[in-house]
Amino acid sequence: MYLKFSMGFLIASIIQALIIIVTETIGISNLGAKFTIMQLLTHVLVGQIIGFILLFIMKKFKVEGKINIWIFAVISGVVTWFIILSINSTIGKVNPPWTQGFLTVFSSLTAFILFSVIVTFTIKRYTYLK
Image 1 (tube, rainbow, N blue to C red):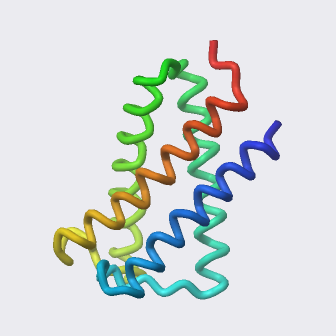
Image 2: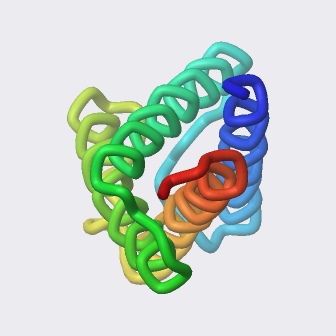
Image 3: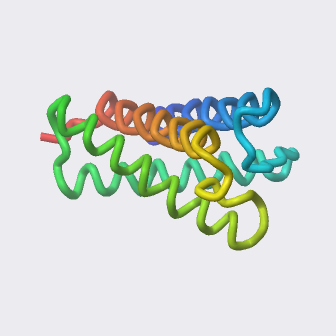
């Protein structure tokens, strides 16, 4: 069961990383994120940790129903975006998106929300929350 969760979280992390890489490459985003192999592995590991934290929260609060899943996904994506990018900008890994303009905020926030949507629907798919 946990392997299925982990695979869903991995897919979500890779899609999120690809969005950031593409938006950085074509100049939409100015995060300054540099994806080395070690940073990509760290990114995937953090994605696994966040995925299992969201699994715990969803089970604890019995998040069910399509509307609640979407609301939970968007809120958790925004909260994760703020926490992770605050930490990464504080330690100098990325530029703070809120100082880089609308397109950087929009593209990075979209990547985090999409990550969270994939994670929450993976959890819903493989969990009986009732």
